[in-house]
Amino acid sequence: MTKLKPLNPSAVVMPRSTEEVQAVMRLAYENGIPVVPRGAGTGETGGCIAMQGGIVMDLSTWDEIVEIDAKNMQVLVRPGVIHAKLNDELAKFNLFFPPDPGSSQMCTVGGMVANNASGLRAVKYGTTEQYILGLEVVLANGDVITTGGIKARCIKNVSGLNLTKLMVGSEGVLGVVTRIRLRCWPKPKARGIAMAVFDNLDDAPATVLETYQAGILPSGIEILDSSAINAVNQFKPEINLPQAEAILLFEVDGNPPSVEYEGSIIKEVAGRRARQVEWSTEPKRMAQLWEGRSVTATAAARVRPDGSRIFAGEDISVPLSKVADTLRTIRALGDKYGIKVVNYGHIGDGNVHTAPVINPENPEEVEKVLQLVDEIHRMAVELEGTTTGEHGVGAVRRQYAELEHGLAVKYMNEVKKAFDDKGIMNPGKLF
Image 1 (spheres, rainbow, N blue to C red):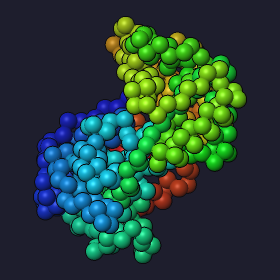
Image 2: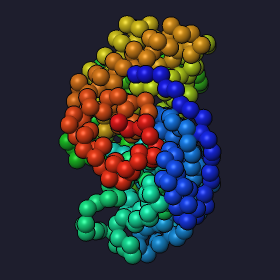
Image 3: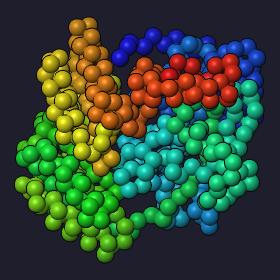
């Protein structure tokens, strides 16, 4: 983990058409000027900062919903559309765009594409890439390509190399996404929440596995370990989460009979190991059960009066069977460096969020947290996981590329050169 030293950009542009993006890119290409595409800036990895100066291309104001094609279960949008606002509009047609990042009220769809965002409900609904049917992309030299078929409105398409998948998650190093064709799903009619309380940390991932083996796929499964439980109760004592080694929250959605059935199975499975299990489909009680998870990120920053949460090492992902070992190791590393760390995350897909809390004005603590974060990242790879499950690489995790991918990094660079031979697209990111 290294400290970043970004430069101020020479200019910020806010295009509102593909032609304007083209004009900027042609100017930048001819003069070798770096270009950094930017959405709402909600990312946590420095992905849209200007590492080498140049032009920051702010796409957040280009927020047009071009067309809701309800009869074909898809929507065309520009990159600045806010995720939550898109779902508000889709709801009028009984549709929704399933990925559910925590920054839904702020993040742009373009940013979600760039980082292949997911969130709480990735267990059932997957990540952004599974909903991208096609993209319009302006390349470094100003060329405009349409992936997924120039005229296509179909949902299935295996024609040609899959450039759509290549662009999703590329974090702006291959081109500027200017239009997005998204697949939509029918909006679920019912929802339920289960909370299970465990005195043994290992019982939590074991219960998740048994839930899957019982044929149940919840829309989301969240974990709070003892550090997160304590943080939430300190932040909002009225929530009064049970003191335990871990709490699991299961969310189920679908039609009403299936939700009730799946809830009953989860309650039965969790009850084999949990000290306490509660299931509800009543909106007020569901909100109460979910509140502890919803405030965890904020609560983490308050565990020290003089502290701030550091968004680093916050997004590792490991195999489900190794979640408990991961949490124990992170606790031990926190003790080793004398740093409070709050742990929570999307246990259903092994995505663990860690929240180190330090005084950022204290150079000694800053140095220690950098060492802590480095160990967390390396531990994740050693445990057959990854340094990032959903937030992306950006500038802060690029040094781990070869550790994770080995020789494949060489070919990633070759792909980058094929699209951006002058290296002007978002330099200093990914690898």
